[in-house]
Length: 583
Ligand code: GLC
Image (cartoon, rainbow, N blue to C red; front, side, top):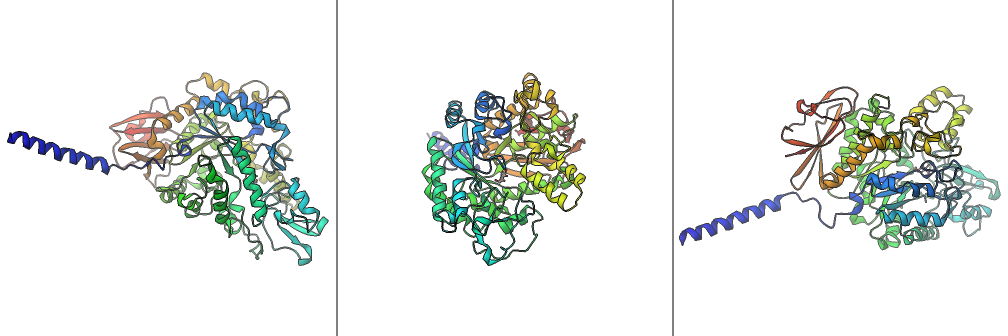
């Protein structure tokens, strides 16, 4: 009897102990924190360059529809589609002349509706690019606005009457003279354009304009799209008293943001947008392109308590320099770690190495020589897929496309590159050095047509492509990689699967290891007792590392070399990447 009682008491204490152990586990994902866009892999499509269905040399919506099964086969969850609205294409669609129409080159609204339906059928979500810092100068609002000073649309834009003298200097991203004010004789006034002269800035101080924008967003959300990438969004608020700013201050992105971004009413506007539109579509995701000049500033966009947006997309890690060899891996690791420190408990980040404004991922962060292109592409995708935050893949990176490196200015279409070249030419600058630099840095490197196969124009078009196809399409193309189990493409598919199968890679805590190692980026991800270590060699040399603990009892979940034996002696081969589950 006594024995039985003792046993019961022992059992009671044992169960108490196990309950406490259970509660002590770090449970990071509360169900209210789980969101589809934290678990998703996002694929960016640059529609002009993705797939042409009608032989006019320009990618289009029907082309995208024809490739939806390819997208599905990657395992991705959502597509971010660069703008497809009506546009005179000064900046390839980032200058919108009608927010409710589709650009004819891309197709019709019926094509769009079909695209959305076919995507949803395959469980792929659609994120549209919303460009509302500025419109096109060919938008009806601007035509009205510039027609007379008392037009009802006058205050949809920023005007500076010429009788007040020259307006205070404002810097422009794309303008030939880096001057954001353009004189217009019709009403003897200057209008503001942070980007090209054909992209006048919208005046968010005007409530009527804001209401128009919210209606446009609701129009697309009511069609059933799944969210927005808000273009150049940190610039929407300006002080319309236009105080003097120091001249020629823009040495780097942080200075641009300091003087031109994060305007006085920015967060007030975003909160209103949330109240008026986004809160009515709680499942939609929104990501701001640009998120201030520090992790703390980025948090303000996405702290759930502030009711603004969902994901921050900051530039520090892509604007750090031209090549990882130059800026150094330690500095690079530090950016991700600094951001993660601020975002570890709330808010959410986007992880990306490239997009349509950047050179190719492998040419900037990896090594695009024949020897290392494939292996370093795989290593970089391993990083994007395992770092804490939502991973983005820019179309073509999943097959390891590289910079095209144009020799002549005539090959470029990009307003930014062409205008800067003109500016330099007028100033008598070194044009050769400029073109050499652009081979590494121009955003047009990332815009060359997708390389589908080894047939003419890489199978992108049967016509003349709007931008040259990289001649290496004969050996770098999706079709060839489909057949090769060790291709960059098939490795990408495996990576997506590993991420999906391991919530720790989505929600798990991030800890940087071996911080000062200049060659190897390694980190630990942890969730509910599960631990995964990622070790990545960012160099073409064999490199050793020191995690500070043994990985003897571990299992390789995925590695980019067929046999990753080297992990045993803490040394990685060139660009080697290993994902290890600790036992
Ligand atoms: C964003 C876009 C870029 C565009 C600019 C102006 O940065 O990503 O392509 O040129 O805004 O809209």
